[in-house]
Amino acid sequence: MESVRVDTWLWTVRQLRSRSLATAAARAGHVRVNGRPAKASTPVRVGDEVRLRVQGFDRILEVRKLLSTRVGAPLAVEAYADQSPPRLPRELAPAPIIRDPGAGRPTKRERRQLDELRGRRSH
Image 1 (cartoon, helix red, strand yellow):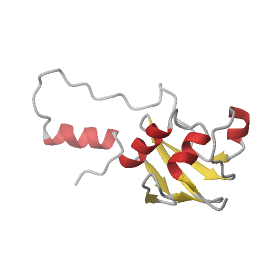
Image 2 (cartoon, one colour; image 1 turned 180 degrees about the horizontal axis):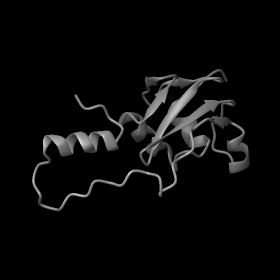
Image 3 (cartoon, rainbow, N blue to C red; image 1 turned 90 degrees about the vertical axis):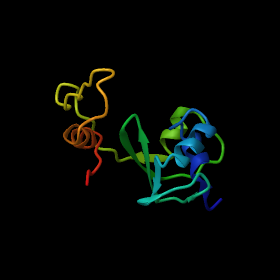
Image 4 (cartoon, rainbow, N blue to C red; image 1 turned 60 degrees about the horizontal axis):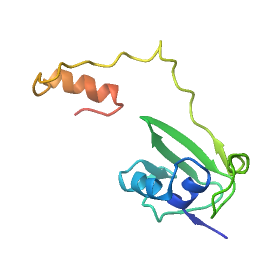
């Protein structure tokens, strides 16, 4: 086996609960392989870097082993190397911007603050 679909690989190494969730994540643009956006059918090879956006944070995984069927957790951990940066503790994380329900459309300043909070570049 030389390569495996990225959605299958993410499911087999237990990063997502089902293959359909892995496919949906790829369709939504939450999966990147070697820095490029990946479709569900993008092939993954040993040594590739897979980025998966989960709960607003990127998981950076290096492919060490190709799996085509789901395996137990101890074996799944051996199939990748997690190179994700550590998450900030809640005390150090920036406070969320709270908007009142029904407050209307955000102002330009509020939109820029929201984009900055979400890690996006505002123009």
